[in-house]
Structure formats: C-alpha cells, structure tokens
Image (cartoon, rainbow, N blue to C red; front, side, top):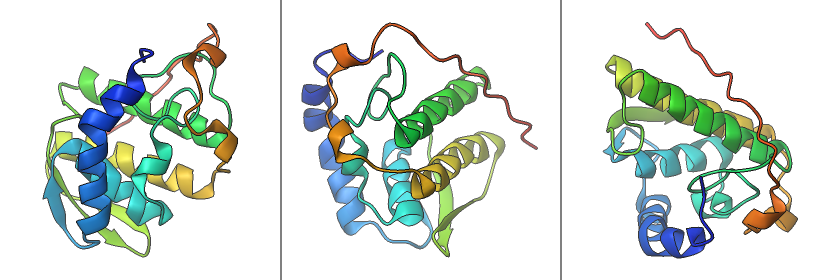
Length: 160
C-alpha cells in the first residue's frame, strides 16, 4: 500500500534511477535492475519517459490503493497484480535482473523462467499504457481520493 510519503520516496529513491535509465538507456539489449528495466520498457513501448507514471492515479508508482481512476491506472493495477504473481512464483520483480530487446516499440523477453515472468509483466504494461488514455489531471493524484474499495487481482499466467 502507498503511504502519504510516496512522493518523498519516489523523489529520493526511484526518480534518479528512472531519469538515468530513460535519459541514457538504449533500445537494444539491456541488463539492469528490475525498476530500471521497467523504465526502459515504458520508454520502448510508449515513447514516454517513465517519470510521467510516478504518482499517476491510485496505482502508478510505489504501492496502490482504492479504485483505479482511468485506463492508465488500470494498466498500473494489472502490472501490480502481475508483479504479485511473480512473487508468488518465487521471483522478485523489484530487484531481479532480466534481458530484453526493443523491436518495433515492443519489448521482447528472453532467458530463464523468472526473468521471463517479470519481463512479460513489464511488456504487457507497456503495451497497455501505449493504448490507454493519459489524463494529466491524475498526475500526482492524492491517496485520499482513491477511496476504500479495491479491485481484486485475478492475475494468473501459464509460463513455460
């Protein structure tokens, strides 16, 4: 769950890494820590910098609570559910490294089972964000506006 201090957390920890990756990341094969790879997948799939999603709606950025505000926020909710599935499979999506390539604005996943699960979470999210509406009104949306009703994660995946 997000805390009211999520902006401080994002600025002090995630933002420098996200800026580095989106500013200096390449669209060919990369291998970095999980959060940086998500940032690269966002840039590959949407053409946007990952920073635009930090604090968007109720689910984009660290944590998540309440009811998603729009299509973009639903993409973030589904991504959170996918990461939850990865953790249930014994994978750690936050620090797990994986290799991927960017081909025709799409993330292509490679390598072992955990890497593939996490990469597919990021790939599906980037694809979802590419087609979703983006409403600037929901950037840095306050937590108290998210409410107390939560959608259920119903994420399961058959990974070979």
